[in-house]
Amino acid sequence: MTFDKETLQTLLNLPDIAVDHVVLGERKTLKVYVHSTLEGTNCHRCGRPIDHEYGHGQEIELRHLPLFAYTVVLILRPKRYQCRFCEGRPTTSQTLSWYTRRSRVTKAFEQQMLLELINSTLEDVSRKHAIGVDALQGILDRNMACDVDWNVIERLEVIGIDEIALKKGHRDFVVVISAYINETLHVIGLLGDRTKASVQEFFLSIPKRLRRTVQSVCSDLYQGFIGAAKAVFGKRVHICADRFHVAKLYRNGLENLRKSEWKRLCHILSKEERKSFKNVHWLLRQRRADLNADERRMLNRLFRYSPKLQEAYEACESLTAIYESRLSKG
Image (cartoon, rainbow, N blue to C red):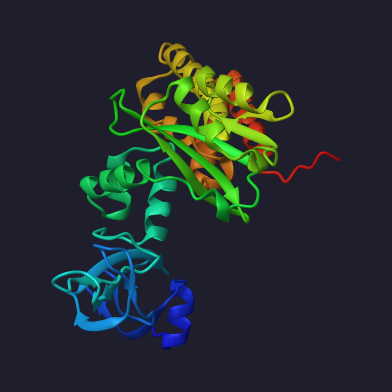
């Protein structure tokens, strides 16, 4: 795979840089060497703008969003500038807008990891994206402490509230608040606890001009989140349950029926017949369209023994189809 520098720079979608060259590393990793096109920075001591060049800092590597299944690592030597106002003339390394000082990833990559964590855990996302759990925890900690720049947001319209368990089986939760901004989903808030008071406080921190643009709040079924939304936005805003938790409810109903029906069938099926349905429970968790011909035949045989199970499976399929349809109020 080859790209000219201009195309690659467009795909990276990062300001104030130019691409020098690209190296294809191991395990489908693209190492993209870039340099800053921005001049000057602010002194870390006095805060004044400075532009007296003083060489470059140490090379840093920053994980960025993948391109065509390739892991992307940006390699940058930050410019250094000397302050002529402060005693001792200290130097400061330039930090560009698309990454945080001392971070190992870009802000765009951080946003993507926060979105991936919704309905998941640190361990799950760590395995999926080959990033350390400690690095993910660092992303959470940095964003937990950040204030939202409301000035860059024109409208919110739809807000989502969800919680993530930091580890499976633990009651250690972080609340993620997201919103579509310019048709792109962004995480706008991370809260360290899931109380109604904390969520309500965050909603009240949204400027009134933006609160007036909110049309609906999508939440899981936790009453604390729903109560906080109602307390701040009132009756004019629609409160809806998110797809994941509604689907979990009706899928749990199918799973409970499967267990009871299989227990019944074990008394009437021979040992060989039971063996022929090996792993059928996995098939019931998938859409019929995603099954191959042999898997569909196995399901059909099961449904001949259990019409109830067929009815429940088809009901789940119909409910899922509603979510995947583009429905309008008209």
